[in-house]
Image (cartoon, each protein chain N blue to C red):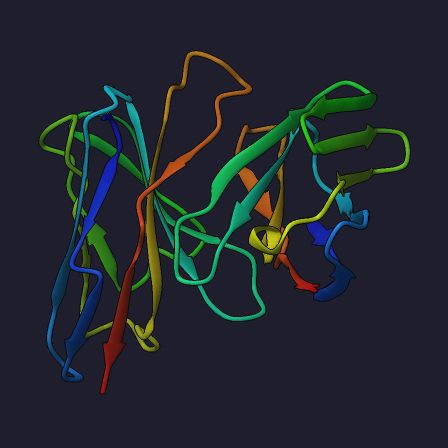
Length: 109
Length: 114
């Protein structure tokens, strides 16, 4: 079966760095997406990786290793507004998205 | 501004009643999707449509129905046959021309059936 694993919840301190991991087992791979979702709101797109390596976008970076079925989202200089759930999704061989359950990130002052 | 509008934000219904959730987009996207989000689970695909007048079942289509008569609109009906309809429903659209096209989501409808 197809599976995406993420930690359920993480806590970090304002101003610090946090890494949210995502491991996947899917039938085929056509890219991995990260989304941010504040409570009760729509998910918003953060990043897309299809090749191995690190993609940097401001305070957020996303890494992919296809051979290991592994990705992480790195958030630097954490701000209180970064408190949200972070969703990992993989596009499989049919370009259908398989979603992880999301990681709830709690930022403390 | 372009975007996706879902209405209403909160919806309450009695068991046994059908209910229709609205989704409208002005992004000129061909593809539209309905997802259901439950606590502790990933988004689950209910139905999707890649072109007007055509749609396909997702992973959990039982108890739901959709129509795609216009490019801009993709309403979802939750029927009385859906056993556990209380959930947060998200509509999304995407530009299907590129593999890396992200989904654009509406703000969701929280449906409560009692």
